[in-house]
Image 1 (cartoon, helix red, strand yellow):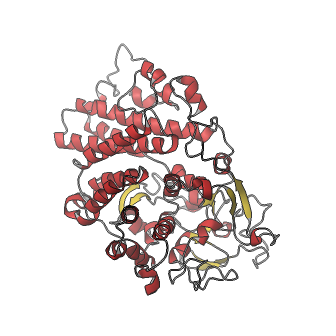
Image 2: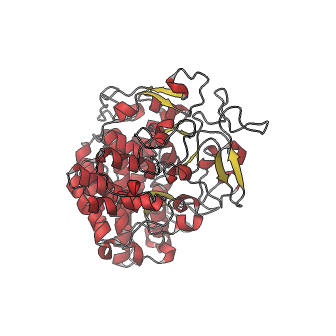
Image 3: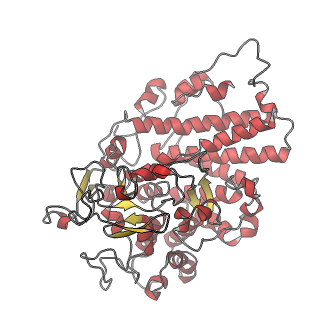
Amino acid sequence: MKYFTCLSITLATIFMTGCKKMDLEPTDVYTEDNFWAVEANVSSALYNNYNQMYNSELYFYNEATTDNAYSPSGDYAAISSGNYTSTLGKFRSDWAFYYRAILSCNIFLENIARNTNLPPATIERMQAETRVIRAFEHYNLAKWYGDVPLVNHVLTPEEAQTIPRTSRATVMKFVTDELEAASAVLPKNDNLPTIENGRITKGAALGLKARVLLFEGQMSEVISVCERLMKDQAQNGSYGLVGNYSDLFNNPTVNRANRESLLSIQYVPTVRTWNEFWDFAPRSVGGRVSSMAPTQELVNDYIMLNGRTINETGSGYTESNPYVNRDPRLDATIVYHAYNWVNADGTAKTIFIKPGTDPSPTRVDEYNPTSQSSSPTGYYWRKYFDPSALPNFVSGENLHLVRYAEILLNYAEAKQALGQMDQTVWNATIRALRARAGFTNPEALNYPVSGNMTNIIRRERRVELVLEGAIRADDIRRWKIAEDVMDGFVHGAQFSADPSVDNGYIRVQRRIFDPARNYLWPIPDAEIQLNRNLTQNPGY
């Protein structure tokens, strides 16, 4: 079919490039005119939209654009350092990725009515699913680039060359309206048969809506949507926290079927897989190179078991033994020096990262500033280790896009922003998350009588949702703290050869964040060359 075989890599050429329609249509293959009449083809087209919704590279590596992680890889290192221009390849490839998905969705929405065999309710549901995907793509575009073309139909070649940017506010309003409309049609998660596990539900649409509203600072609306998911589950679906935090990412059975995930990128072992973890794991357990590593700044935000920050009086934290008595999610997420790595077969291995400590002569995991394969920060990732992975960490585990934990955190933040945080809200949100993580000390679980509640919630959000689609990137931008946390040196573990500089913590990268320009990415230069109605963002 011509639309599916003629996709281009940029917005303009996507809509300008077409395959000439044959005067005589073949009778032994599907054509544009008869494709949609076949139910199996409609289903394939729908799943094609799902396939284009998001991918594992965006899911993981956008973390390196934040203070949570550092990647030495070209484009990501350039973005995090602030040393980039509008010609950077990632900006153009991301732009094209999102608009390619939007095109696929628009084609589906404009053609599914050609099928006269499917029940109207089935068609309506498929349309709602596709509208959620299209809304998600527009949200990603608007959060990164600001004003972007709002494309709600298949553009003509002329439109593609002249379409202007739509204000971000208008795009985000379109997104939230679409998500709300879709939620009214979509089924609840507890009504799905097992074979449909992973399809977009009412809860997924509402969960995404809550995220978008939070990004836009519409806190009253955030509370309303979150309460629909938290307090009216008979109408919107049954959700809750799973018993063990690690199981969401490291237990294949729980990962693929649980009541916490509202929306995930679906993978199937040996059929559709990802293997970014190959470049996240220590080499001694099968890793290849360290292409993205956690930062010391992230590690520092894991509180102590008594609920206090590492810099707080009475915390019990010591630099000489920094990883004991910490938030259990630290062990579930990050591999540090002397970490007890448990393999898929239950055997354990100590990971030696501090220089000069590994009894093995290979010392492959040790921090080495001249090595291109060891971690540049002295830390590796544990989160999303799949014990059922194929060689080279080829995994079929799902990647969670929206979890119920995020709904609780959204709710807590919105309540705090409106001055409505109290013990009841705390118990339903932060206390619940900490109890699930493994905290037992009343000081960590009870409603705080002192301290900065906004910072407490932000810290909780950071450690709970790290490495899950770069939610941190959204957060530091909407909070307008990127100019603080992305400016200056980002650090690694206390393994520097010069203890007089930054107390011995590795200086990994010098970052510069210009608040006058860096809160938005530039419109790709190549797109402006193709469409002169696309103006550039300030500073580029």
